[in-house]
Length: 423
Image (cartoon, rainbow, N blue to C red; front, side, top):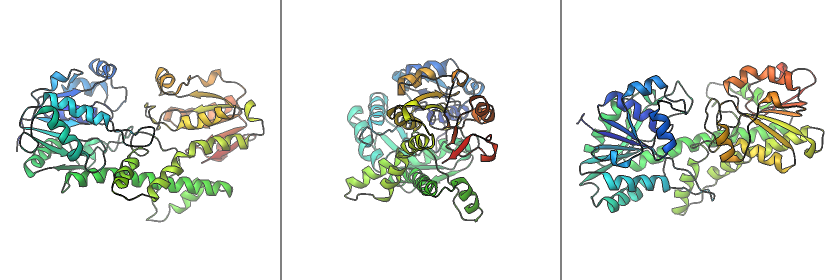
C-alpha cells in the first residue's frame, strides 16, 4: 500500500470539487483540473458557486487549481469526475469522458492509476476509456497504467449526506490497484468502503441507484395524475400511507438534474445494445418527462380565462431546491408549455444566475415586486428563501390560484378567495 500518491482530480463540479478538497486535506500534492476557464478563475479567486465547499475550507485545503493540462503531468493517481449527459436523442453522450481520456493519454506516466467516478453504463471504463487512453498514450493497460471505478454519490445541496458520510463503492481491475483505491478513498471517507467484485458491477450499481429512484418518483407522479382526477390531494394520501413501517417515502415532482433524469438512459442504452428493450424503466421516464406539460395544462384549466390573457408568475427555475444549478431543470418545460398556449409568464429565482438563465433557456428573470395582475402563482422550486416569503408573496400578489408543485404549503394557510392546487 502506498500513501505517497500525487493526485489529480479532473472535473471540478459538484462531485469533483468536494473530492479534490477532501483529498488535498489528506495528501500533500493534489491538483484540481477543469476545462472551464470561468470555473477555474472562480475557484482560484476562492469562491465555489455551487456552494458545496465554503470559501474558508477551499482556501485552507491547499488544493492547487488549474486549467492547464500540463499540470497533470507527474501525478500517480487520477480521478475523473466529468459530466456524462445525454444528447437530444436521449442517448449517452460520452464526449466529456472521451475528451478527459485523451487529455490523460497526453500526460500520464507509467505506474499510474486512473479512477473514473462519472456515471456510465457497465463496460465503459474498460471497453471505451481504457483503449482510448492506450491509443493516445502509447502505454498498455494492466502493464503501464491501471483502471479503477468509484461511482459518485454526492447529493447536491445536501449538508447531511456528504462525501465523507456516504459509503463509497470502489472497484479496480486487479487487487494491487484496488489496494491503492482503498488507501486513497479510505483516507477521506469516514462511512467506509464497499469493495465491488468488478468494475462492471460498480458501474451497474451506480446507474441502478438513480434508475430505482427515478422509477419510484414516476410511480408517485402517476399516482398524482390519477388522484388529481379524483380530486384527492396526493400529499394527504402519502401522509396516510407513510404511517406503515415499510412504505417507501417518495413524493411526486419534477425530475431534472444530471443524475436521476439522465442515468436511466445509460442503462437502457446498454440494454438495447444487448438486444433487450426495457419497458418499465422507459415508462417511468415518459411519466416523469411529461409532468411539466401536465402542470402547465392544469394551471390554464383551473383559471377561468382565455389562455392568451393569463399572467403567471413562476417561482424557482433551478433543477432542485437550494441549489443554484440551472442545467437540466424541468421547470422550463412548464414555461414552454405556457408560452405555447399564449400565456404571459414571469420567472423569479433567488439562487439562479440571470445571465445563465438567459443563455440556457432564453428566459429573463425578474423580481415579484415588479409583477402585477398575476392570475397564477406557481411555486415550482421551493428554495428555503421562497418558503420563508411564501405567505408574504401570496398576500402581495393576490393570485386567483396558487400552485404548489412540491406540496410544502398547508392548504389552510392560503387566504380565503385564492384557490390552491398541489401535485
